[in-house]
Image (cartoon, rainbow, N blue to C red; front, side, top):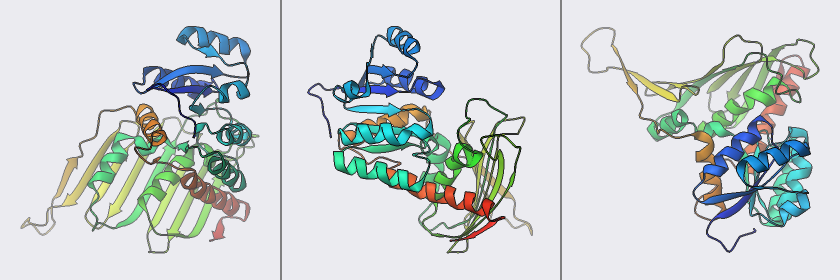
Length: 325
């Protein structure tokens, strides 16, 4: 893994679209890293961003790889494999936006490249850093069992994402959260979709995951909604969790077992959530992992497991609704 002699890590951003610009701004504000370079296939735009942020427009990926310890890669998913492999094999730590790659094979290639280059590979499943999710994780007791998970991730029609279907674009976030919460294997996948005839594939998908321990997860993702919704709900042995990822709020409800009433009243508590920006928290974890102080919260292997579920849902849709794992 590359290191720099200075205290701050020297970093770059590859891809200056909407998400890439979020990374540029977040890196610019970081205390323990220094944004040095940016690069995009739009040369004029690269120069504009470089001038605005007082950094260098890198002339090539090879040049960038020789100058930095870490990069954020925020290019279209189809380009993750080639660019990520080049950087990782050169020993540059990579934070690659989700999904890690288009296929399970390509995900494994990137993991192998990280191992070959001795570089940290972290994947941008940013909801892992959402204060609502981290509050729920902290509240779940070791003796509590999750019986059911329900996730809704709805968007209005957007022209920004055109290269992947709604499973890889939106549902992938909640699949990652489901795997972070459940340690039981997925036994069966079923799915159905609304096909709108667009080139990017399905725009509304509902999926059902059955786990070996008897739990289930139902997930809905849509790019056809009028309103943006990001909700995750957990039914557990001890109660019910409701996560609003948009508002970064989490509530916990449970029956009042000491009540003398025939029907116990429900006690509802808003969980204390950190007041932090998920992207900046993600970058902090990334830099700490590079320094050997933490593990990446979302590793390449984690992203590969998510991609296996993505493939399973897509296969279920191709098979008419069901795929046995």
